[in-house]
Length: 562
Image: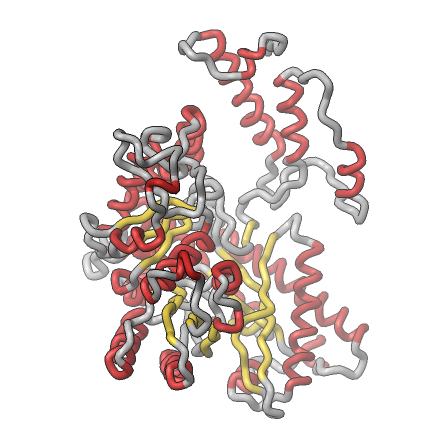
C-alpha cells in the first residue's frame, strides 16, 4: 500500500473533487481495516484473536503510557493500532448468546458510512439534509408499521432507549404543567413501571428532577408482564394521597425474560381511572426498544403462512404478535435499531403518536440563534436534548430498505426457532436446569439450577421457601455465572440477578438469579443447539462440584450431585 504524505494535511481528508488517487487511498485504508478484522475472526470462539491482559493494572498502565505523538503517524500505521484495539474483542459468532448486542449488518454499516461521508448535523436540514430526509422517511415507515397515522405522528433518532424514555417523560411533565420547563417540575408528579422494566426510567426520574422516590414499581406476573391490578391499586393510592400519575412505561419486551406488558389493558385501565378521578390520563410510553421489532409480523398471514414457518415457531410468533399489535395505543414508543434492527450503535428511533406533543418541549426560535429562525430550512429539531445530532437515520433507512419486512420476519423467526430448540434440548439434557420464563415465547431463555429438580421453582413462586432458602439457590446460580464467565471466550452467555421478585415464607421478597441465553447472532443455527447444551451441561456439573466444596452439608442432594 502506498504511503500517504501527511505533511500535506489535505491527504488526511476525503477529496473535494472526487479524484481517483484519494479515493483509492481511502478504499485501501478501509480494506486494511476490513481485512484485518477478518484475519482476527475465529468462528469457534466468541473473541477475536489477539492477546489482551486486562489485569488490575490494565487501565492505569494505559493512562501512564498514552501520549499524543508530536508528529502524525502514517495512516497505515494508525490502522494497525486500531486493529490492536480489537484484539480479544467479543464478536458475534454462533456462540455469542448474551444480551441484546447484535451484529451490525452490512446495510447498517453502509448507511453509517454514507452519513459519515457528508458528516451533516441532523439538528437542521440546512446542515444535515440527508439525515433529515432519511429521518422523515423512517419515522413514516415505522409509524405505519405500528399503526400510527403517519401524517400526524412524529419522531426522531436519539441516544438509545434511554433517550426515548427521557423525552417521553419530558412530554408527560409538560402535558401536566406547561410552566414546568420554566418554573420547575412540581413535586407531586409520579411515574409507574414494572419491576422488570429497564433502569433507564430510574435515571430519567433523577435527570428531570422528579426524583426516583416518585417512581412507583409495579409487581409483575409470572410471565414478567406488568400486573395491571397492582398498577391500578398503586395509582389510586397516589391519587388519594394528593399525587398525580403522569407517566406509565409499558415494557413491550423486557431485556431479561422477553416479558410483554399488555398495552390494551394498561390503556383501558388508565382511561377508566382518569375519568373516575377527573384527571388527565397519564402519558403512556411503550418501551419497545427490543420487542417492538416483532411488529413486523402485525400484517403476517398466520393462516396462509407464506414463509412456511414451522408450527411451533408460528405459534410463538402469533402469541407475541397478539400483544405487539397494540403498540399503536401508546402515546410514544421506541425502536432500538442497534438491537434487532441490526444497525451499528447508536441508532434508536423515538416515535410519538401526535407530533404536536413535541412542541411542548420545543425551544423558542430566539433561544436557538444558530439555527431555526433563519428564512430557510424546514426541518429543525430544537425539541431534542442534543444540539448536535448524527445522521443515524441514514443507517436505519438503509437497513429497512435492504431487509424489508420479509427479511426481518425471516431473521426473527430464525431466532425464535433456535430458542425453541434450545429449550427442548435443555429440558431433556439438564433437567435440574429449570426454565423460569416458560410463558415467554421469543428469543430469550432464562434458566435456574436447583438442588432438588423442578419442585424448587414452583415452591419459590408460591412463597413456600424462606428468604435463606431462595438466597442459597441464588448463590448456587451465581457460581454458575462465574464459571460461565471464565469460559466466555468459548461461549458467551448472559445472566440476571433480577428475574421475578418472589414472596418468601418469612414475609420478605427476593429476586431470583438466572442464567440467560439470548439468541442474537444470525450464525447460531439449529445444528449448534446440541453442542451449546452439552457445553452448559458440563458447566452445570462443575458448578455443583464447586458449590459442594464451598458449602459442605449444604442444600445439594446427592442424586443431583451425582
